[in-house]
Length: 506
Image (cartoon, rainbow, N blue to C red; front, side, top):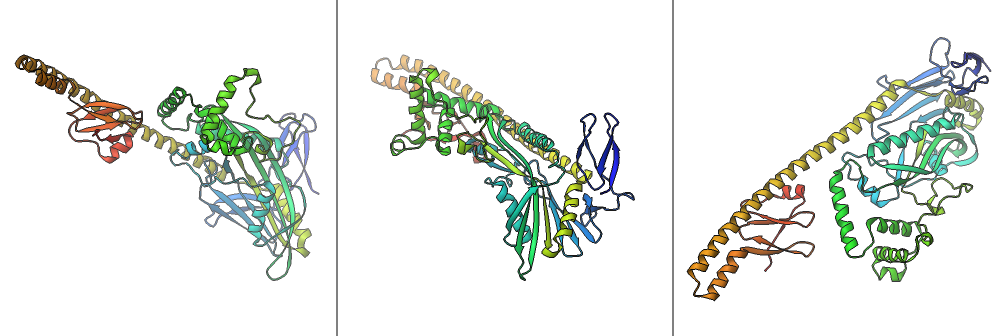
């Protein structure tokens, strides 16, 4: 084994490192962790570069003689944090194949309220939203997809990757990714379960020609089970004032009727979906989940606060919970974020396993993504976030403009109603003076002059009197009713302003 001497940048102590190793090395003198990397050059003839057909470098790694390299860049967004994916491949003269795929990040949103609100974000990338896959199945499924046939696992061990040699760095990077996503979405999450694991499995399989093959597949797996705090309607780059007004109006209505609040209904829904509570036949006949939430609210109000049951069972620190299964242990989970920081694959014929394994381990240990590719990824993510924010700002500007126009129309309508009232009052006095000898006719004229209105009913069952001078009468999202004369709104304006035209009562 060839060793090279390096110097610790913190204390100056000598570090001896395997010349084919790229890893995080700890200084024996001061304990400082140092990343050892290599660049291709005359002193490192074994390091080769993987580039796309048009010459873009994707990564570099140590390879034996006789291996050819190629790279592929797939320009498709998987999530806001994964703007593209890459694959690098090395083909050996003995038929062996080495492959590595770049980062994947999937989201399994378990909270239906959060899923609905996130879906409202313009230009949001939703292709990475999928159901949770067990880590073992995730790796095996990918390996079989690359191999093209079923595989049988025979053994497993630790993967000697750069991330696997420093699990703390893997956790830090994962937490940073989640934090960036939370900051962008204006939400706050905390982890209930975290998994950062580097694993390598040996598989055997049979090709279509009957020849036996060996597959080595590994991954730097990362995942978090997340729970979100605060108001589910908060942030998410939407019109916050509008969301707040809607929520407050719904809560006022529920409180007036003695119903459960939105948060209480959401909590009951989560308990039923997670299996912590069952929805009996009598519950279904008595208002379903909303009825159950109302009854639970009354029961809690009737109990002293110190005896009220907790709705979320906390994890015991000594209890080992498999990743992806917090809910099975009574812990509420809003989202599972999972995937691989990188995956590795080796195919070889059985008789070439020893040589192919050595090449694969060197390939895994020394693999370095291209710095220019990392910069390209960072720039793409920054542009995506700016694009979404710009679209949100434009939509908010349109809404504000429409709201100003609506306020102007409401002011004009109020002035028209006031003028009609003054005219009606003058007509009333004139009618009283001229027709004082006929009470029935005077009474009828007074009613017509004073009221001068038609009756309308909004969607909440409330009735309103609107001047007969109004040619069109509308209801907004809060149930308020107003009328305007002349030409009314077209359908596009009605949709943007969230207005509904009413017809007068018969």
